[in-house]
Amino acid sequence: MRVRFAPSPTGFLHIGNARTAIINYIIAKKHNAEYLLRVEDTDMERSSKESEESIIADLKWLGIEWTEGPDIDKGHGPYRQSERFEIYQKYTDKLLAEKKAYHCYCSQEELDAQRAESEAKGIPFTYKRTCLNLSEEKKKQYEAEGRKPTVRFKVNDGEKIEIDDGIKGKVVFESDNIGGDFIIVRSDGVPIYNYIVVIDDLLMEISHVIRGEDHLPNTPKQVMIARALDMPTPKYAHLPLVLGPDKKKLSKRHGITSVDLYKQEGYLPEALMNYIAVLGWSSETGEEILPLEEIIRQIDIDRLGKSSAVFDFVKLRWMNAAYIRNYDLKKITSLFKPFIEKAGYDLSKFSEDYIETIISSIRGNCELLSDIAKLFPIFADDIPSADEEASAMIASAEGKTALTAAKELIDSGEINQDNFTEITNMIKAKTGLKGKNLFMPVRAMLTSVLHGPDLAEMLKLIGFEKIKMRISSAYEKNCV
Ligand code: GLU
Image (tube, rainbow, N blue to C red; front, side, top):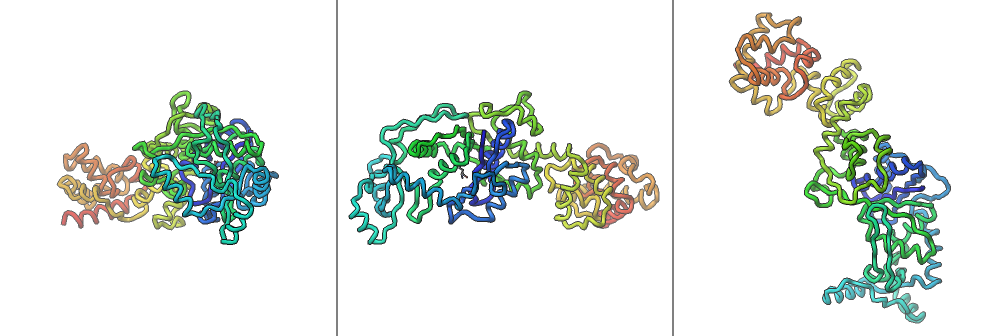
């Protein structure tokens, strides 16, 4: 078995494409198959080296490994389509010689006119084969006019194209309904995706093409080309689309859609991989958090759901939080570090142990690695700036009562180095505040946020000196 992922480097790696990459990877792992990476960069205007690099970096970040590709030549290269034009030319010559393709000199205006005519009649556009039987003389005349021909594939009339799709089942297309003879090489000599994908899949010995459902309408064209070239077709499996929560095709409107941004926001690759891999099918036990090996064991092409999968941003966050909670502490600490640095802290000022203890205490409150930016100041700053809800809590009547009590307890020495982690109970005894009216103001004045892990645990890490400073400062601000 040989599968492939064939991204077009025209932007970032999007969730939909990442899913195709991931499913191919999992299926390859399951069947011990070769996994080939091919860069489909013939759209010269939109393709870029930066995009190729970022897609490759994102695939690597996700943990996807291919066995063959631009960086691992196993004899089926080159693996970039832009480097394979000579190969395609041979097939174009063959199709032209066998009259299975022909040169078309129609200008854009002429084609637009044909299109407009179909539209006016309310019928789908089909190319009128204007150039199918051009005389040599006519061709010369066009060329003298400076027209550059495209190459059109001649579609057989009345042909049925039946695809036995691994996910969708039997799908039947009629050759008469695909828009007529279609262009396979542009007038500037650049071959079209639908055409060269067939040649590449054949030469690269791809046995299974697993890709997004958006490619299903392309498949009859690809099958026709393969037939014209007397080539076998691979087995196809078209993955249902990924939809946004409103059941429309997933797009930027719904939230982050590029893998790169998930990385920047502080998602773990394992969580994103897990979430995407379980989209659209359910595991044996219904569990969604599954180690990759388990996903590989359970999933197969025929287990993948036929209907579209809805991308649930909230569930992904939840899953990410679970991964953060359960990750090896040393490893998760190293993953948190860049986010701490990004928040403006010089990590060399803190001991490794201290950072690790902080992470261990607060990772349960982080859904994203970037959430650390809000929690780290609680430990690192003398007086972290309070967020809006914490400020309001401190300024409330209970807040002021608690704060005044705290100030007095500190000034009198009743709260000191040895017992400051008991501060909540001491304020309670002094003020009679209890429940939320006690916990919330105390948490607010000591940590500047209302949510977080166990307060006494945090206080140990914050230390008495900082607690004293925070109480004085809040007291000055609110009670004087
Ligand atoms: N290059 C195509 C894309 O990025 C994929 C082609 C295919 O999988 O056949 O959508």
